[in-house]
Image (tube, rainbow, N blue to C red):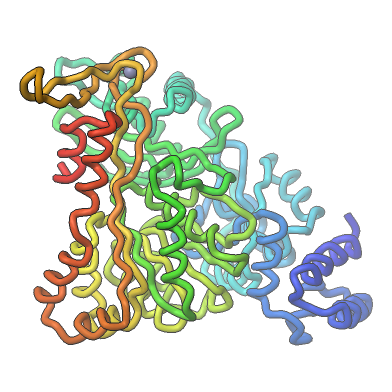
Length: 522
Ligand SMILES: [Zn+2]
């Protein structure tokens, strides 16, 4: 593509999103003809748009993820796939490599010529991501200066094939996790987590286990530490999956777990989870003001992410910025910054980056500094804050301890706590009679059949408790001692999860034991 074709595309996008006027564009194109500089750069120099506006518009229109690059998310080996001079000139940075694919952060992702050149020089398929030019340049300055090296590639052994096989099978069966460990009798075993239950699959010989753990360490870039974890994107057949690989030492040698979260582009729907539109509307209403923090507490990261994304989608079209440890939902309307751990969100939330957004979401604020930074940001704008603590009172207690009652009282817009509860497999659930035949009632228990991979469960719903503080509540939140405030809060939220759960049991959707497990958090 020619330079002018590129300029037209970027210009069109900026015009379509009303970020610049046609007058701005014509002036910039004229300057471009004279200087030969890039259109985006000229628009910034002329004050027509900010760098952040341009990156946001590009990411939004072209469906490329918008990435804030930090040293933690890039792989030095991958950066060295290309000469530094090339990276500076084209304002790109290869940041991660997955198999035969490389993620390329680009200041101008419409630059087809550069994409072709990177593909030709590396022999890899290029996945584009948008990043600020200043962010790319700053990162390049921080890189240790080294000669480009070709990444060493080991021949793929049987363990690579074996891993591929299990990834494909687990995904096909709908498993969320694969466990490779030792059973205790010298046998190595493979288990899939299906419907929350670890189910045995055929084991493998000892020699393969050692090779497999070594391969996984290399595959996920875990290094040699006995305990390590990393998240990466892998393609399994046609499906792109976020995989979280962890290796831990066990009594009889190392064990590995791979959690699998397929990426999805559909708008999350909460109705099948039993969360009604009224709840979503109430939460949306709580965020109707100019500022405030909405807390979403759920221990399951995927359910938490689903809840947060559903609320984001329910808000009218706005500039939304999501900082995500589990970035599996993809939508062009939402600017996404993947992060490896909760702690890494704190500096991004506290800094000026993303100040142009109307709504900010962080899916894991379990790190205290991130929790405080999110609430601080909630003073000035609207924030959705995810947290693994899944009861409302316990969650607010943590927030009070971290951020203090004054900040919480002025900022908290609402809290939703949610716990997934498994549903009995309708094909095999068994009736249990309680009491005498005359005045007894009955419930159901799981049994297990082919349809549910012998787990007895299929699918889940969520139990929720919600509290939206009113003006008078802010007074006592600010003025009361911690314990008094939490006691009042307990009264306000009430036993709503218990009530919902008993209704599920009465309707034969779940078992008494499953409800007890969920309510008692065991
Ligand atoms: Zn069944």
